[in-house]
Length: 517
Image (cartoon, rainbow, N blue to C red; front, top):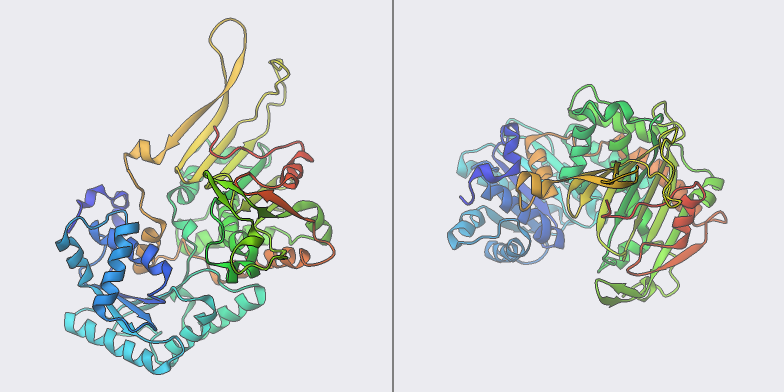
């Protein structure tokens, strides 16, 4: 049904659709925002492009007393608002909605899991297909352990002759190293590691995956991807939005736990990792873990000098006046939670020794943009005098993750005419312009498909999660101690606090302007 399959960028990799068996996708927390905004719209787009198997079912599990029809109507609202392929015909939607079901149950109600189990078995038997199940935890994190334990008690977790079982766990995976380790122990009592898919939607983005292709499929980049040629690396995750309705979570987590522990460290490992022996799950994840192990936890002195923390004040974003963080609903007026952070970190291995990685992220910034930029060293001997006291600008390779996915390379070129006047120019590659795609597959589309296929390459392994927390915990603890840098403020709609600029200026560098050539 729907669009021709050839229109899907995912069809460029024919093996992706292969191995997608009939499956029931069980969403715990099906009445929540994530399900309506991301999961079901992503699944609908996959169905439109014939990427789902004929025998698939989507089963919501939550407390609200909804019927199958209630669930279908709520999901249609989400699909119309957020899917890449909103249903343009009633028959198109009805064909998809016939695979949507709802089972009422609270996460703590053990008897309802037996009801869910029976429903899934009967659906598989009625359709004559394997009873394969992909459980998706879209519930609040405090219920993860209980849901997993109930799945174990109901004997719903182990693979059997009837079908396989897998579980997708949303971030945050733990609140610190202790809770992440405890959650890993709990889930390992019920599921094998090969069944567990810890999701970070950033890894489903086209340009994030293209980091590996750029590095390892092009002979011109990998030889210079090291300390001999790279001066420094910048990773920026800027958000123009505030905290929305997440004050309860965000005021405890802050930007370090919300963004750095997962998104930014994931990007850093892909940029810094060694070539894996093969593009397969364990080989790729082994190299990512090696990067995290090479990053030493920050000392008290480094927390004082290598980190910046700040909180947004009232300002203007996209022409709209917005309140400061402490004026947001349900935020304490004296909250010390950081909504912005900038860090300088090192990867202490042979490839990257002495190369600083500058990381920053903040809410209520000037625009929404995520970018990784590789800043190369200047030529060792300047043949050309600086013009008008302007220094020769270093080459920069920028990978735009969002919103306009692409890659740009800045280099110097001679201006037409007499003399040797020069100017920085940019070679720019855009996914949209080069491949003619009006919209790339959503990150959840790719990751859900990989989970159904049983490919965990783009999902975090247990040791990766724990090593990331080993790096983040000392920073969070240091910010609550006498070694904490001062909590600065920055006006909403700007690029952050003055201290972030000074962090680079002390090293004779400056932040790259996002979305700039």
